[in-house]
Amino acid sequence: MKTLKINPENLKSALKQAVFVIKKGGVVIFPTDTVYGLIADAQNNSAVRKVFKIKNRRFSKPLPVFIKNIKVAKRLVYVNQAQEKILKKFWPGKLTVVLKARSVEFPKGILSKNKKIGLRVPDYRFLNLLLGKVNYPLVATSANISDKQPSTKIKKVLIQLKNQKHLPDLVLDAKNLKDSLPSTVIDLTSRKILRKGKLSKIEILKMLE
Image (cartoon, rainbow, N blue to C red; front, side):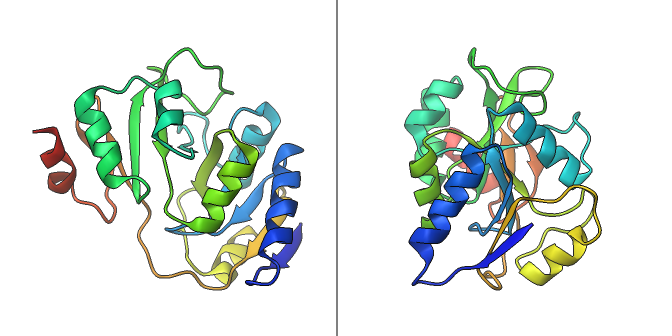
């Protein structure tokens, strides 16, 4: 596992290394607008399996996906006018939405049993640059072992992963991120909050009225 400390001077080279690792099917610990995340090609079977192994996560708990904009969302899921209004209001941002997937091929562990998928457009320039460079959906899950706390502090993330059998291929160390909750997760087909985060249910559902 290679660790690279990133700073304003080496952002381009760090981004280049991250793109290289992801395109080869690797997994990267990457800073986000919420907590440190595990990032990988969401359409690469071995990469997705590796993320599950690193997290000790059950395949019955699908992984959400980062995308670069609403246009990509419309290619992946069915979006009605009311739902699109929410996406335009809260993206880029700390809202993961679950919607019915179109006929798009994804590895096991991305789609739920009822063919839904969680999507988010992050609000973090370095990550958005990565999404633009690879130009395809990326697995987007917090860099922690399942049932343990995600963190904005890189040392805490690495301590959790210490001595694990399966490890990421690259760590991008941006020091401590701003304190943040993980993203709010809402199933827009059922209007059910699946995970509480910074945004409240009332704040989101107001947009559906």
